[in-house]
Image (cartoon, rainbow, N blue to C red; front, side, top):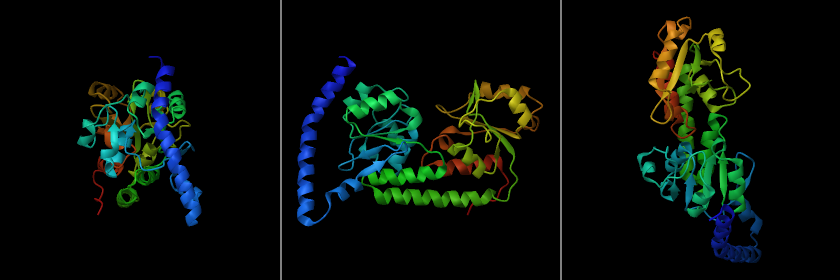
Length: 318
């Protein structure tokens, strides 16, 4: 079946539910007139604006949600919406229950496979969904909500927004509040400490680090480090070894993990650069990539682990 034919078939399948929804909409409009309650107020309550500025209307809390990133999956489960999730990516491994969900493609999921799931909501990070796929899903009337965490506070806000969307407002607020409180406690550990120059090796071949305007750079700063990539104009800049040598990091940090990490043989290659302070002083460290690379509810755990690596002698948070 061609792509166009598949979209047409999906639209036909959606025709009956759409007609029913229109009848229900008219009934609510009439009820609003009779009771003096504005119908548009109901619309406003169920309209959500994503991080691209797109308005997404949901007539009721979705029961068939597709997650296109591990961070999204973790947020959905954290607010108690795991039963509403019908598909995740192959890299969605936390919590353990998430790994049991049906799998969908990661950065290049097909339109056909997504529509075949009959989702009433798809949630995806901006960098993990292609613009052409987003356009085709919009044509097929599949609601897509895009998240794009620029700062850590965005993570807490996303938890609350997802809570409202999925009918779990109190859970979303509770998780977001706990996250903010824990981050504040951890931030207090590093406020008076010196800040070693740090290189975070997001990718080694080519060498890519994190720049300003990213939640990861902010996370490194909160952990009490001076990110050597913070002055870059790009969020994820490439660095040459000449630039690294000039900035002379005092600590080089590698994410590790089955899906989100730098292999040991690539880490070992840094030992030949003996003029770098971090190498000379034996400060090549690693951290679990999934707890700091994912803008999700475990980001406070990631910050705690970062502080332990950067400032091992810091006073523990109370």
